[in-house]
Image (cartoon, rainbow, N blue to C red; front, side, top):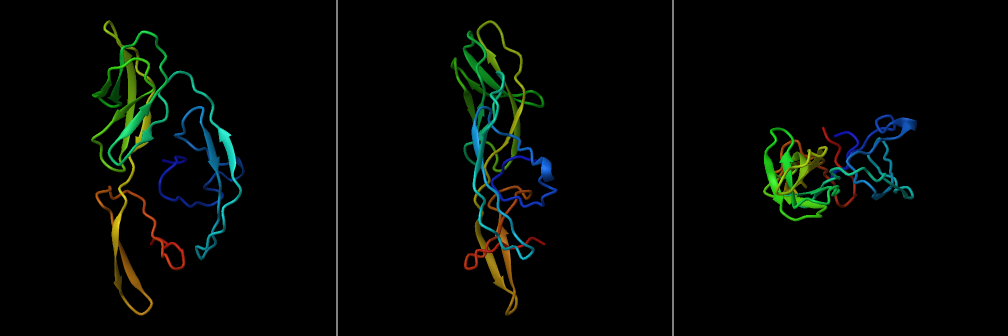
Length: 193
């Protein structure tokens, strides 16, 4: 989604990155320091070096679900702040139905891990605390993509003396996955069609 951190590069113009107002970066973890750098490229896709870095910290949020972490291509860590002193555990629910996805039967946790997910797929979840007597209200929701599978070796087929076809092997990723093709001798990237 717009402004979210992602695994693949996302080039855009000054206007697409918010012009003088800047780009709002979403999906960050509360109370965490992030360091950013920027590079440019010309119309021939030749990149500059990166700028110097600049750091900032997100604000500490009120007790709520935190920013999830993609642990692998099949698991996500749902982070949250424990706001109760009487819970015996936590349950993670799908935002839609809501359907129970994970039970973490321990007090004072800060996360629950969910596994058996699909690669590079978006999941939206919410959390409750529970004890033997009652459940809490639902937290807010959080959305995270699992990591994408690394693509398998591409297929390169000569077409002419100045042209080759490079076919990406998506390796079980959804077709919406973003890919970046780089020619390793020059270090340049292939411009998409």
